[in-house]
Length: 155
Image 1 (cartoon, one colour):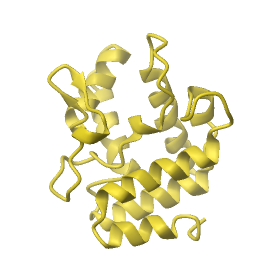
Image 2: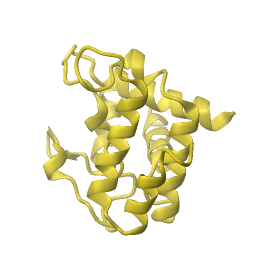
Image 3: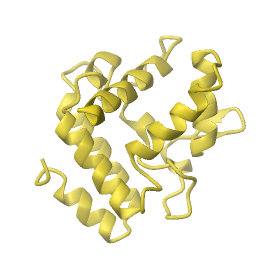
Image 4: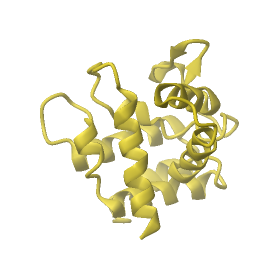
């Protein structure tokens, strides 16, 4: 899988955080999006290739000394989950912690911080991979994404 993530690793090594973020989304969507709207829906998020997820995480963690990547995000999500909040509140608190929520609004791509000094877990921007269809429980797809990563990391 490392050959698939080679462009990502090159961008990260060059400090091209924004381009690396876009490449991460491209890789995830190319792997798992099977049709309909462009982006990952909850069922697709749960099927992402483990090798790809782990390679993406390794690239981000290596380039940021562990500050960014899926492991960093999962650690933060688990810390927030330990508070036993309702799922929607858990997702919002996670978003605030990683810097994806400003006040009450979720950031769009143009509001992200593309630098090594961004909040821990800020990159890659996982909301950019999802299908923008509001079912009233959009956060469920994100929980499935991180559950898939946890399953992959445990093997």
